[in-house]
Length: 401
Length: 68
Image 1 (cartoon, rainbow over the protein chains, first blue to last red):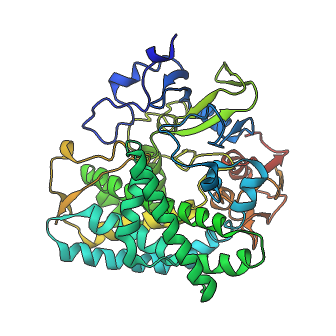
Image 2 (image 1 turned 120 degrees about the vertical axis):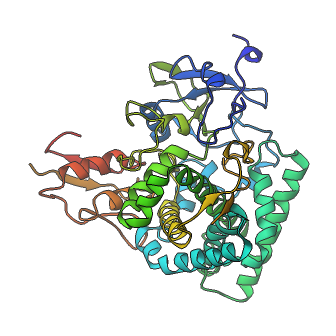
Image 3 (image 1 turned 180 degrees about the vertical axis):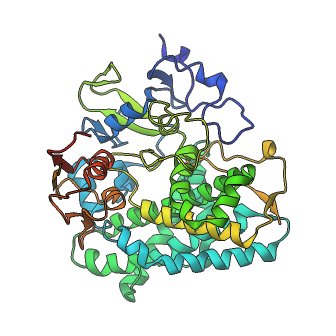
């Protein structure tokens, strides 16, 4: 089949239900576990949708995450030369990736996240106060879902929260696949410049935040150069607030539509850990999947992917796979959903997952306790969705109480 | 039946799924990489099998006992 005759991915059929990862119109294009689809950049990719196949391909070193390779399945043209890939270790392979990632593994390990739980609780508390002061009604995304993870990642990194509008606007452009290439280039340049200034300030005035420690312990020793630290900080700043923010917004909408689960969470905090895993599975906000390129011929789901061919692991459908999650299209906070792939899988699996879990648990439990009468203040079918973003979510969530 | 647990720090990426699944068997060292607390856990075979399955980097192996 000619490339131009293939179905276009990411799928864009209109859907009024923000919990449906792929609507029926587009599902009919998926006639098997491995399907060829066309990309907006003119290329194509194999779309892999089964849980077992996605796990296999993301854990295999036969697939590269280096987006600078020719044929890599890009959703939009790359705005930069290879230099600005520096420090962005999610787009690297092997030892290059491990060297940078390992500078951060201790920072995000479970023990350290437990230590900073009081900080998360404070960020949740002050954001709840701000939400209360803004309404009712008020936009939960603007006053709660976005501030909570932004306050936390700012504090951890040492980025002034007062600058949140600056980096939130630009990171939204970075994640928007429909963004104008020039706007995208400017947004990246401005964020890198901002972080370069911050790093220079830390060099002159050492500090105990994460960027300050990396300057003192890694840049000063020559293990990390300043460009790499800029790229690494940019990755942490964006991933640290966009993902959790969209999870909090969508989770709140889902709980408002399931009052029995909302009440259960309010009455029994012990349910929170399991509910968070199910929310992660069911909502899977990275809906465009994870792109890779085969380095050698590999069998995936009974299909041979040839060396040099592009592959996209569709996490959102893998997380609805009935073979692993019975009744996968149903939200069931009492199921054991730990096998979900919402944080990805393989060596690139989200390094911030203990932080994300703690933020979601604390934010959702405190929200439903503080506002027992929380209710939606808009038609759920008409809520603006971030449907061109790599990280899916709600642009607004009007609530009342 | 007990299992024998081994972990490869060279492969570990510090995701921490093992600590979440079987905190009595796995910990993270000062670098955030896997440390096995109990190489022959008597009663944790199911959870060890789950930790093996959930390890994104394939850094954990369990031999003997029930197969996952």
